[in-house]
Image (cartoon, rainbow, N blue to C red; front, side, top):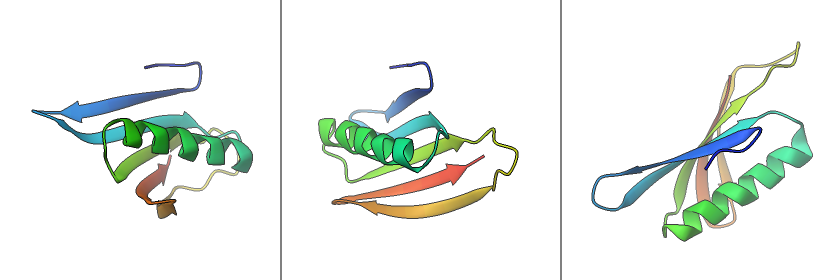
Length: 80
């Protein structure tokens, strides 16, 4: 599924084993919505772990990575 500022990829061999969400950084409020969306995708495939790649085009961007606990999900996020 692709949108104007996001997309996701499902990696699967015989069953869904990884979901990678792509987002553009629009601030903290949009980030929380992105986490909710990724959590819903993970629920669709009965997964508890996912990945979030965030594109930050701001002038003061910071390259970082973070392990986020969101509800019962573990999300590994990377800002680029």
